[in-house]
Image (cartoon, rainbow, N blue to C red; front, side):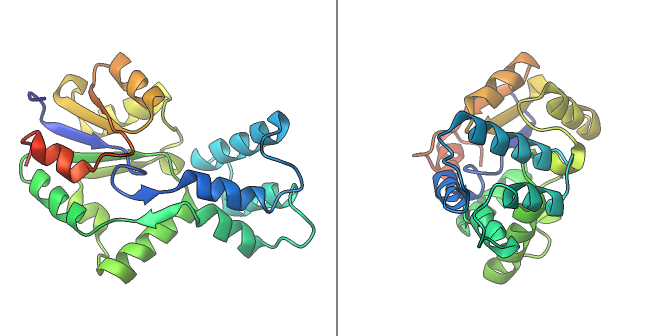
Length: 210
């Protein structure tokens, strides 16, 4: 795929490896009710969406989980369970980003939150010695809890378009969620649905983008 000047990345399962089922299992072990129950699933999803759009802060998010948790569960247990989905970023992806940045405007739009971001920044510093991840590898990064919108909301993409002064037709959006790809296509983005068994560095290398 050619004919674009900008690459808009998703974060989880594209740049950073994550394990959502592991976090789901960890959270479920803390709750009084089974996550397979529709009411429990709906409540947790609503809490996560509120947290990811900055509608509630970290303390409020943890309190909402604790209200439905078993008696012995503490704040630290919730944080550990929530962060258990985060695995890390292989070093070779940094080299990929550096190479891409020479030829493209690199952007990121991530559905995320304060707890995950704190873990990631600590991981980058402790494991890779990277303290300037956002500025070193990207021209701009948009975190849902800071911009007030999350994918697949059209407002999230429009925020990026307006803030970064980009044209969707000149931008490749890469994400592992089909609903996000569909939303981006509607706004005119070039898109690439990323699959779990792929490696982003290899895919972009084989496509000749760096």
